[in-house]
Length: 258
Image (tube, rainbow, N blue to C red; front, side):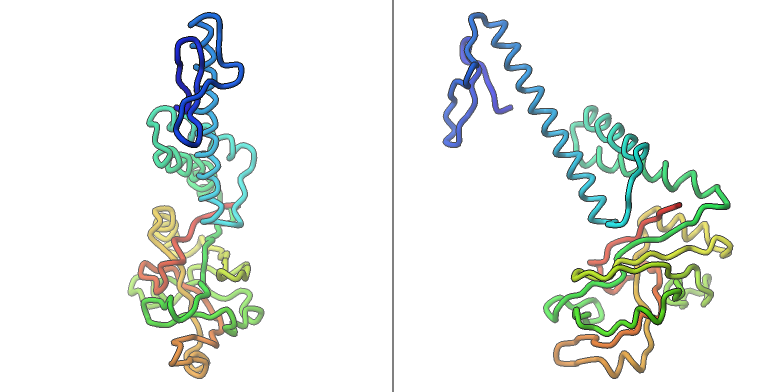
């Protein structure tokens, strides 16, 4: 804690590390000085917890910019975070527990509803330069021609249709995209009548899947620039959920059930 007692005075370290009496910190009795110190330290603990909670919420927003908690979800998140933080003293454990509480409220039980729309959200494309090439030794510059408007309901596959169990049938469709300088944020609807829907749902919940884009090969070949290894033409004809993404910077996808 940044405060201490010296006789009947509460002190705080300055920038040089020297302990100095705080304003109004000297008291006629030791008991009053101790009470003042306890109140100050309680405020410090509260402030640290509030900072840790904000960091956890900021992390969630960075993972899913379009995700919005309602009042009940926020209450669950905060209650779980503070309870676990008080018990463990570990912000990471508290954050993961709060994510779990939120996921259970928003995702885990809602899947039973036949009327719920199950959405998959995540970064589908990352814009970078030649210094940050992906596992296939290529990259997408910000200027890449994507033709998004022509593929508004493009299919979502599993492993680019190459998985023997899933085959080539789409598991969902695109419903929304947002283009940023960082990359493309995507939203897809999962088809609940797909025979492997529950497996897909579970793998997404477990953080096993990321997005990988699908395009049209002859356009890609014509737009490829070999010196910079850049993909300058990439019609976004579809996306796939995959366990083996070419670009790790995209991170895992998450579920949103409406």
